[in-house]
Length: 468
Ligand code: TYD
Ligand code: MG
Image (cartoon, rainbow, N blue to C red):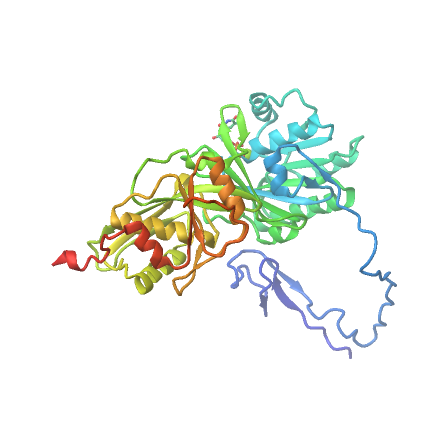
């Protein structure tokens, strides 16, 4: 008697294995994701089954012709920068962002630009009726372009329409993937299974025809793209559109890109007539600067290949709580704790009795460790009650030993600052490609304690004595 093959019940969302079928997966908490499967099928063959003869696959050498991935360039420079020089043909891109941030606006403007450049663009809206999309297009002055429009949510219908077109589209925009549903899954639209199956069908279409598919994905409150994370793994690029409600600017960021860099950002400003590209973002983030306020330091940052100046604001105030507060907006709070510890251990600046608030101006988010120095200077300045020079930029990484470490692209950071009227810079000693200056405009710091002395002068920063 042949041995009965062993089957298991596997969650299709998180791959947890269960011994029997159940409605809810204990691994990820999703419902109706468990499917009976034979994980050992095909392994070892088994009695009575002849092994299938394989097909010979060609083996190639590492050296050889490389076919450059052909791209379609939107000529919206900020968008092309983030995609790595245009959308790659046959690729699938996921554009994430909170509702109302401007995803549809961005894609409509990109569609119009591409269409003007002679590309064949199809815009499928599952959220809005044709009339609504037309209204937006009119506002964006995109209504005279050749972009083809459909309001449809069934993936099979969309694919049949696309395959039926005389000229294959170069770019298909699906707004949004959460509204799509396919006949091959019987759960409701927006569920994990539907989103995944729909995405799969659309990606298959992209790969088989060479058209680029851009899918809009809504983001949950926690900042994740709703639906299974699997969709993020399935697509070639994940681009996030972010910004905060109280500001007009929006940042486009690549979180994953199989065909380009992930450290570039695109900056836009939301206007009455759509998104405007911001070629020089530093001006935007420095626009709201107050003169001569203690606790403000301008950080000379880099985003990918582009320098970006942004103001860091710190407020240090005596605490009334047992455990002082540390609140950070736009930076890593663990990094702030580190700077506070270094100030205490190596510079004799004790913030143990002070609340510390740190804010990056304009709602911008910094991820570079090069911001350490600007943060430290802002903290010292606020604690001492002395304003830093308004025409000075700061950058450098601080190590746990209290020394200041060089960061890449010092020359570029300084050049950007000079372009914006800054006259001096505080940077790590040993920075490479620093422009030569005869005056004292560049202060190369080696230890954080030297800077404390420079900023606070003779002022004592030990507050223990004040309390007596
Ligand atoms: P939208 O692209 O619909 O956002 P999403 O697709 O991400 O949900 O943009 C919504 C917001 O953008 C809305 O609050 C109005 C604003 N907006 C403008 O300020 N100017 C414009 O020209 C357009 C089209 C939208
Ligand atoms: Mg939308």
